[in-house]
Image (cartoon, rainbow, N blue to C red):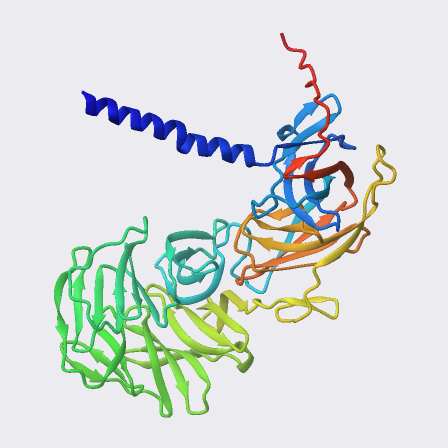
Length: 520
């Protein structure tokens, strides 16, 4: 029992003389809350309020676009408090400080356009940085393996003939871009080959499906209906979906194969040397035009296939072949259209998608044979231009420029309660973890244009009318433009002078009774 009393006594002493006493001492040393009162010139909009030192430097943002209902209401206007700390949470030095702020009323903010990325058609479009691979689905939709702004990778489904364009199949963070991505699609699965590692995910729900076969050294994958072919260093292995039942393999390569496609009957593949081979119980070489190297291959209707070709002069083309009849048609891009790097055909129509590289970006197209078989027509033509360094040049938005104007001058409304309040204000475009918008040159946030994080570059230029602006922001995938109007609907106000001595207010305001609510 004595031991128990001793333990309790020690605990009581620790409680009374230890943390609690230390906490009381800390609270005694903390700056006392400073009451700040002001009367807004208007009862509409938002309030931004800051604490400034004697040199006019902003030391603390107290209110960042607060609505009026966040303040206490007193007889002499609205009230809030300051704890005497600066933005870093440290007590401010002794001296004189001033509370100043702005009421921002109904400033107009309207989204105008997206630039330099044709994939981004609206706010619901995924923020595609570049497309690593495309694959046509039987219903005409396109499956894209894409890298998105913010460092994630995704499989997204694009429906060019539908108003509801986009559906994300699966997405996830990826620290490094893949160096090589290939896609294949069965009736129900998307097969994604990323840097030699194969993944299978459901097209309907994005759920990953375990693969029961060995997957070392996979070089190419192809799917058609409920059939699957996987090319590795040793053989092409065939499977029946959805259970991945083995259907044999094709070994004894006639050449080092790099790409495989499934036909209605058998398969077709191309080698590192540009040769093309067909598999039907054995390998047979297909005759190709001279001076042409086939780089990759994709399935077409019945026993046809699409080939990405490189020519002796360095140009590229997409050619349509029949395994029985030879070359059927070709599409040759112009030099300014870019150089072809990938092709994906449809197994149920004369239709293919292709990726091209440009000096300043990338281009993705989908092309089909015209109904009269006389030539080609575009289903879509999407260009991505590198806009990571966008700016202003000769009065125009350009994807790359060192000129990035960010400051604006506006004329404010007169404050009827304080005619001496400043009427001129300089604003600066900024982006941070909370979004993008306009702030004063000292750093007081006034107008949030976008609450989305991830923007790394912003720009503001005067609009066509007084007190209007064009606001541009980019996350690397594109540049968005917003139109800002009625910037004059801002009123400055003075929240009073505060003299701090010994971390306390030297002459605090007299206490004020709250406004009667009128409720019983």
